Image (cartoon, rainbow, N blue to C red; front, side, top):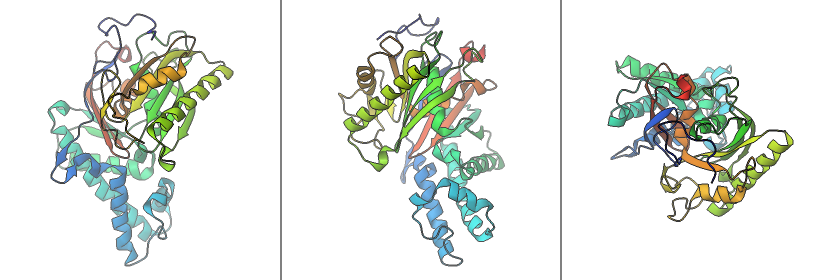
Length: 361
């Protein structure tokens, strides 16, 4: 595996998967699995939790005015349809959604308080919230309402804000912050992967260093997504499909005249070992991704072989960490900040900015 140019002073000679010392931040903690007698605390602020809360409000409406979604199962009610209900000329239907937003915001605020009580999260000044729910108006309302509840309670804690990038693109853009120093010089773009509990997304990301050296202008120039939850493949079938998606993007980059850096950044759920093994937390992925002999980065390296004329550096980190890294250029006014990602589960990570990093210059 070629690592390209020499690393910056203070960086390890050989980048590791799930490194806690990245070029622009120290990863203080991630994948915290808070539990109490009722189960995982984070599950109360997940997409499934919102659906359960919405179902409870719909059930109440069925006894009076009727179900505003016509009896459709929650999983078949799109975020766009829920958002439209908020502004439609039907106050009773809007009241159902507002009730669900309020209850979910209360749950999210409580979860935030639990994280702030952790030693690794002490002194957190801001929390950005990503994940699929953030892409809706309902999700944004819940995030801001949870922030208001925290302030209303007098909590001396962080502000909450939705992540800036579209959730489908944030983790791809964040992968730029995993790359060894200098690897993008003279290159137009790189490959990135975001693995989730329902979908896998691959993209070509342009770091746009000529426009902004801190990666704040990085953007996704091509995106391919596959909803694996609809097909329920085996693990190996899913990995083969991922490899095919990346190979297709390499070919597309060639057709578009893009010079790819020999780098693939991957965000994946769970606790990631420095050897690229997923140690735990992959229960929502298709098949057994925590098998002791399974190394996703090695599989990707073998399938791609060359990117940009060289064997690629393939680095993997937790998906919440990578999604949070997309915010790094915009968090220069604070020292300690975190990310929560509302998806199939609740991803989480806490960062401390590194002074003198590329994002500070």
